[in-house]
Length: 317
Image (cartoon, rainbow, N blue to C red; front, top):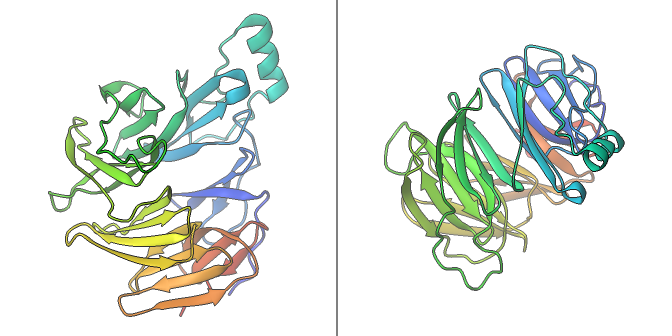
């Protein structure tokens, strides 16, 4: 494996974009990384005054959200990826503007930005559309210019009385349509591991249900073919096949990231690497804490760890 340079700050998320990786830090830092050399390509900036809650890419923009509970503020903004990122206001400046003048503070360098009337719970994109959910405010779909396409009221979930706040949406993602081959739809996952699939065009509910295994949701990943990997905060990891309605369970979570490969699920678990194929589960201990995967075209599956270093996935062939 090549000796790649460390990232300039502790990572929280990677977003692939053309021949770059958009690197997001735990404190809201943003920069770009060359996807071949893994070298930093742009300066580190902080567009928002806090950490980034969620982000996605659509039409050459990074659409991201941040929340400041102490000031009762939440905002969404679209940052153009064909221009340099710009530093925004810091917490002290924002607090002064809000308390003394009650000003609405837009995001520096953004194509558009809007204050939100509730905490954003998740965001995803597909083609030129963005879907996001706000706490107790329903589900919204907009285009990349922030024009509303549709909105629906809060989801009426199938009862999960055994879990507190089971109906609070925990994850929003794009995944294969349960009924139409080669189509995508929106999947919403509740805190109590209930799920709802929505049509991208209209927001209409396609299907919904609860997993048989009961638990509090931590992470979800799609395999891109209709299957899912779900992590519970109790440590259980569920492999769910919706078509056959089967749920296989192993221990090893909560996991940090997972991707589906030709071998099966590759999982960054707590201080171990896991490969879960159809026949067996392979585990290799890891000293560091992995954060996210990147599939490098030469060196294969790499892990970016919390020490800002690129390391090999231990189970790589």
